[in-house]
Amino acid sequence: MEIREEKDAGALVLAPVGRVDSTTSGDLESRLLRRLADGERRLVIDLADVPYISSAGLRVLLLTLNRLKASGGRLVLCGIGQSVREVFDLAGFFSVVVVAVSREEACARVLEAT
Image (cartoon, rainbow, N blue to C red; front, side, top):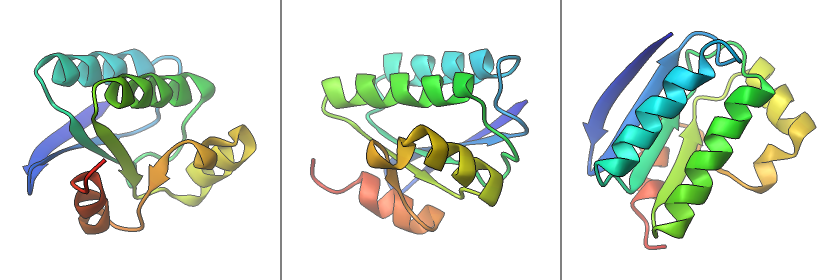
């Protein structure tokens, strides 16, 4: 899995490309934990190029969300396609995570005061 990364208006945007499952979720987790260790506190994860996410991927997102909350940071997701949306719905994930329609909206929301 490739993970694209860029700064956008003070937020760090990570955009995984490919499936986020038990085989690839470790790569995403390592990258996210490194960025948190580097001091990043405003993260956007753009899932537009993720056709599938498993429970292992959800665990990584939840771990990141909890660590950011504990440090006063924010996480916003965007670009959620239909198959990922179905997994989020089944897991009740929409009740715990902030989701934006577009990357622009996600960057604006992640920079809002907490």
